[in-house]
Amino acid sequence: MDRLIAIVIALQQRNASAQMLADQLEVSKRTIMRDMQTLAEIGVPVYAEAGAAGGYRLAESYRLPPLQLDVQEVLTVLVALQSLTAYADTPFNEERWTVMDKLRDILPSDALKQVEPLLDVMHVEVPKRSYKAPLLNELLDYCARAEWMNGLYRSEKHHRWLVLHPRKVYAEHGFWYCEAYSSLHGEVRIFRADRFEELQPAQAQDYPPKADTTLQAARNSQTSIRIKALLTYRGMLLVEQDPHFGENVQLVGEEQWEVEFDCPESDWRWAIRFFFGLGIDAHVVTPDALRTEIFNLSQQLCERYQVRSDNK
Image (tube, rainbow, N blue to C red; front, side):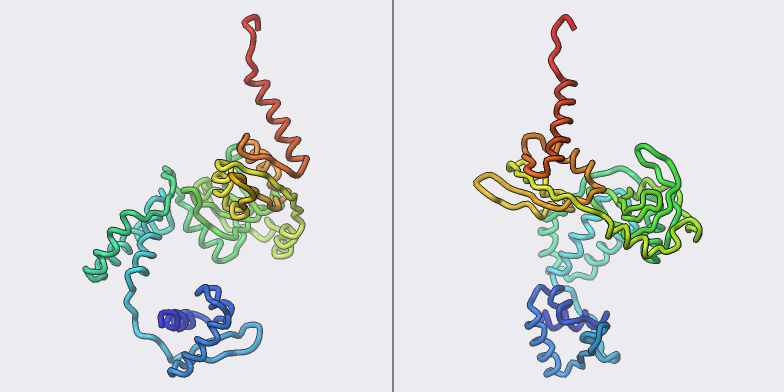
């Protein structure tokens, strides 16, 4: 019954295919098909539309009455909101607190008694940071409109205007980031939201005339390098934290793990530093070019910390 209600709520928001609903509810497509038949049998006006933009939908006049959140649903929302309070800045600074207070206020006292102890022991770990990102909401607006923008950006080496096509804004490691195509660099790059000092709409002459074509070409033109490395237990823990390829770590033997992934050519310098930083907790198997780069950096490090005699 919970799944049937979840399907109806989802279809009240938008049309959805059986596969989309199956992915959302983590069941098989066959289960969703049976659920649709059950909904029709109990009188819910659900029907299917053919075509690329088709899928299941509800009659426009059909709506479920407001539903009370159960304990687990409230816990889900409160844990998510609690993790946001650890961020130094968000697009909804005040709302993250007021929503938590409202949920606690409308929750029956017996349910609240079940939720509060769980909140004390369940956390989404977020590093504490001290920064402000005053243009975060503007960045979100540009992403939502898929519009080009001029951004005055301060990096470690430069302080300059960049013509960018933002794709998404996300939070990670206690910071907010903006993924955007950079006209200057000719590729998609990641920018710290708190390092933008000013944003302006970009003029047509500032960015490539065929923006969509340029973006797609940038994605298609990126070649990749296959990297394979063996890891110790500590190395595995460190690599698993990486949001891009951490899920590729696999156990291959007793106390030995392996990671294998395709590294975009644009991230080559980062890969060198990353695996060099793992030290003896990683053994790069391929490619040889990466092994050579790590060897060269190791020699430089040895020379820097070489023990000197008293005469030198």
